[in-house]
Image (tube, rainbow, N blue to C red; front, top):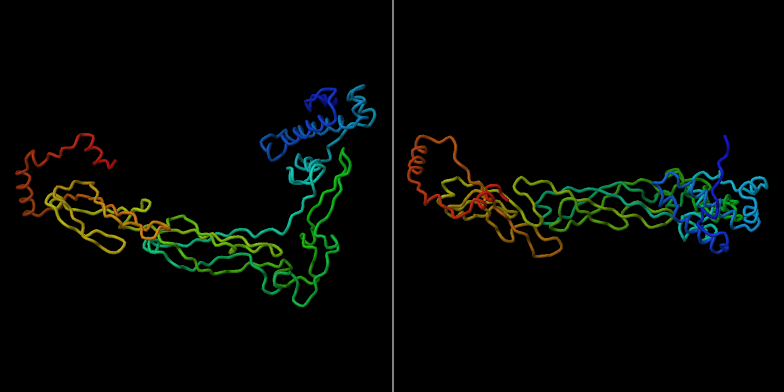
Amino acid sequence: MARATPRDPYEVLGVSRDAEDAQVKKAFRRLARELHPDVNAHDPDAEEKFKEAASAYEILSDPERRATFDRYGHEGLRTGGQEPDFGAFGSVSDLFDAFFGGGGGGGGGGIFGSAFTRGPAQGADVQAAVELDLAQAAAGESVEVTHEAVDRCERCAGNGAEPGTPIRTCERCAGAGALRAMTRTPFGQVVRQMECDVCAGEGKVPEQPCERCAGRGREVARRTVRVDIPAGITDGQRIRLAGRGHAGEAGAPSGDLYVVVQVAADERFVRDGDDLVTVLDVPAPLAALGTSLPAPTLDGEVDVDIEAGTQPGETITLRGRGMPVLRRPGRHGDLRVVVNVVVPRRLSREQRDLTQRLADSITEDNMRTGESLLGKLRRALHV
């Protein structure tokens, strides 16, 4: 199969044929940043586009190659052994790193930045859960939470060495904790720095690894911590305990512990923000006559006055009987008591006679509410 002819490097970089070196370099850097793998993960052709841009820059940045191309084109470069080849690079990320260094941004290594080094990694965060009932969530609670986390090995005190045995300087990196690798690019030799694969960047290795943690200096431990749950907390909220997560590497800070609070459903109430909603069953005759009935609250039952003629779905609000407002001491939501007028069933003969006498005595005046049709529908549908 015939080899496809590459595009004109001036066209690829978008520069004129009389462009100066600084213009060529600026055009390549702009184009290369646009083709970074983090920006073009959706573009399957990003690698080939970057290789094309790198090839064009390699030609135009070298006076000899540029002169050869201007006189003889790509064929002159091939016959003269001057055609660039980027086939040895595995991916667009590797290719980008070879030109710009690890990290892919202005702070990476390579020809446009300093070498990149990674320090000991901070410990990861841990998540645990605690379940409370509604009363506990309202009052606030101090609870114990048990969870597993990576902790410093107690046997070796985190240094990875069997107690009483020495820790020696890593021979592979000579104690530097990093290795340098040299890559040849069209711009010359690029030195990259990476973490030592033997000492994991610490520069030292135990002569005899700890038997308990196999030289890692860390182990999985089971911890129990006491957590103060603030009054008024809602289901799904998290409490952060700084530094209680996984231990960091080589003395790096530990991660955090996040305790997720799960508030169990309460058969008496539905929570609506800081308000509580409950339903009070009221027999139809008592709703007509008016009465006083006990309703549940967080502090026990209280008597609620039902006015004569109370209709189904009407709401009676008890101020300050709801949940505490989180982190606002002394403030509480309300308790909304929804009246559920219950029509009696399975009446006795005497009850039927009494109900019939009541029904026979009802007139239009007893049925008049003063509500519009829309108002009646809203009340009936609770909207």
